[in-house]
Amino acid sequence: MSAEGFFRVLHEAAGSRMQELNALDAAVGDGDHGTTLVRGLTRAATAADGKRAKAFMRASGGASGTLFGLVLHEIERHLDDGDDLAKGLERACARICDLGEVRPGDKSLVDSLAPAAGALADEKSFAEAVSAAEAGRDATRDMRAKCGRAQHVEGGGVGHLDPGAVSLVLILETLARESVS
Amino acid sequence: MKKLFNDPATMVDDMIDGFVSACPHVRRGTLDPRIVVRQRNRKDPDELVTLLIGNGSGHEPIAMGFVGQGVLDANVVGDVFAAPSADLILDGIREVNGAAGTILLISRHSGDVINGRAATMLAEEEGMKVVPLLMYDDISAAPPERRADRRGAPGTMFIYKILGAAAEAGWPLEPLMRLGEDVRDRTVTLAAAVSPGISPLTGQPMFSLPDDEIYLGMGVHGEPGMGRVKTGPVRILVEEMIRRLLDDRPIAAGGRAAVIVNGMGGTTMMELLTVWAETVKSLASHKVRAIAPMVGSFVTTQETGGFSISLFEPDDEMLGFWCAPSDTPAFPKVELTNECPA
Image 1 (cartoon, rainbow over the protein chains, first blue to last red):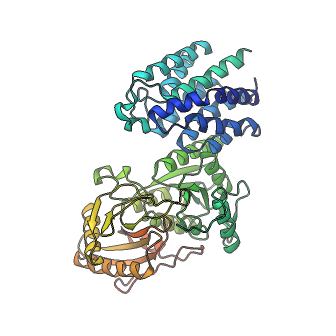
Image 2 (image 1 turned 180 degrees about the vertical axis):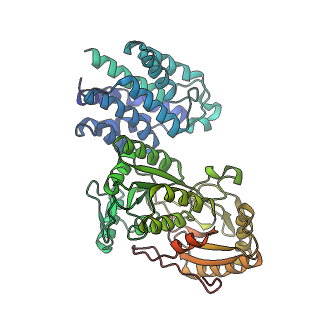
Image 3 (image 1 turned 60 degrees about the vertical axis):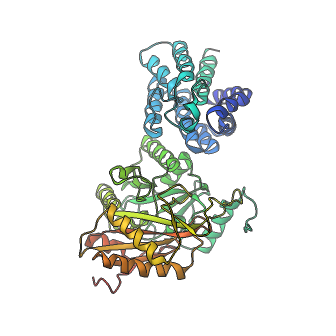
């Protein structure tokens, strides 16, 4: 699959779940995660080859646009240039932890990304990596947020899934589905 | 509140249109219209280190007004009060980068730090030599033992100018970084806000304050600081601010401080010069000489009323760079004052 195809399908998938992502974000943040994700992907889907993740960063905006953009950047390099996906996701995860001052367990996209990157580093299959990401996503429900707006919400967002962890799984599931088909 | 714009969607680009056509020092970048680059007397980026910064707009003349000989090589302009995206900053780095390397100045605000550092990571990945320099000086944002958690405030202009002059003089990348960190660690800033600015996005005041109160330590976007004090003669206010600044970073008796008195946009030159005069007297009472002042409105937040005082204790070499000639649209000529013969 090309990066062009991946971004097109991801744009459609995110569009169909935009309201759900906004609703998740409304419980712990400012309620626009789905909207900003789709805004970025709309631009990425029509950007020039090699510039899709960067187009995403620009259009999505803010810190979350940058952090998700770093994941999409590695996927784009993997699909277009054949760069190693395991190393790429590991690098993206390390960068997000560094830049966002976030660690696994803080209730963020890292809780989905780190287990997936870890599974790939252990030479597990991509399907297993996606399963690990899904388990990480589900675990955010019981976590108290230590980063982002959710930490200022009453109860630290306990009882709600982290919207970034949910959309990160959506990205990986789309990649898995399209890679197989 | 009346504001003179066409359309919120184009206000930033309309402003840059006006800026580049009014100022022959600069032109638009070739990679993106949101990048302003130096036009006159450009550096050879393989020979001299280049400097740039990205920032949200709405604070002019900083930072586009400082693009030119002896200060910055480029400025990446974000939306109003919003950090430019990492890919836009990356384009800005591409515009100026050469073999001598580039320093990306980052005023420490969350979005600027994340996007700026991400941009340097992506630039390094592409083989460019670039390092980020985090700048912070606002003593109201964190206590002295957590200095690195402070946000960037108008005292960062000491770094712009001193690194700009040293880069022009041929200093290589690593010594420039050490110089920048040294200047940063010698600089403290404290602000006092008297009335809110109006956001050009919402048309609403950015904070509220009773008529007889002044907010001490407010950040450039209205972030919280130390708390409220009652209005009175400005002498009392300045004495209090100088006391807090010197408590935070003492200067020994007989020492000297270069000073920036920065207006926030809605405070008159008449008031700012009064603040400077009181700063000289207040520092003298602590046996510190006030020298080489920069007085005016350089880091603004629309029509916010208020000012900040920045103190910087220079060594002779730093002072020479601070007073070195420059040629930009908005950086003033800084001169030693009579209080301090060179």
